[in-house]
Image 1: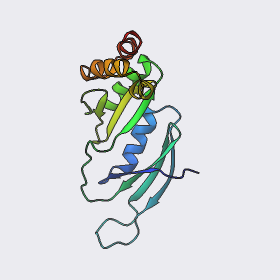
Image 2 (image 1 turned 90 degrees about the vertical axis):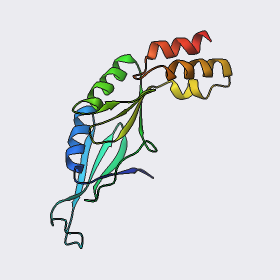
Image 3 (image 1 turned 30 degrees about the horizontal axis):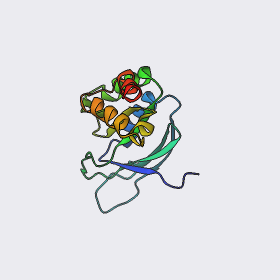
Image 4 (image 1 turned 120 degrees about the vertical axis):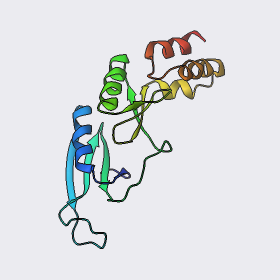
Length: 159
């Protein structure tokens, strides 16, 4: 049982989002859903309230609040990737259908959710006590939109 998990607010797209993320992340599992009962907000009784999905072992609750609450950059999901092929895969899938590339490995999917698609070693590189190596990776990353695994690894190794 997870001790903590994220709740992602959607106006009315929770079930659609769950299906999309299940198509993006191999092994993702859609869990139980809860449905609106009678309510003072005028939401149709029986409409989806929440849908749970597990992505890469992390449970996430998608919530239909039926009130527009826009996402912003202050919260994002990080997907650590073992190679460039994975980075390319997640980048393509999560930007499909209206998603948008941002900068430094960040993208916004078609629902407005922010994602960071990064090499798995990025945390190691970014927290290195070797200031020269750490800065070389950061300076290389700042020039990229989708991250180039080989360039970042070389920047760290060769600094």
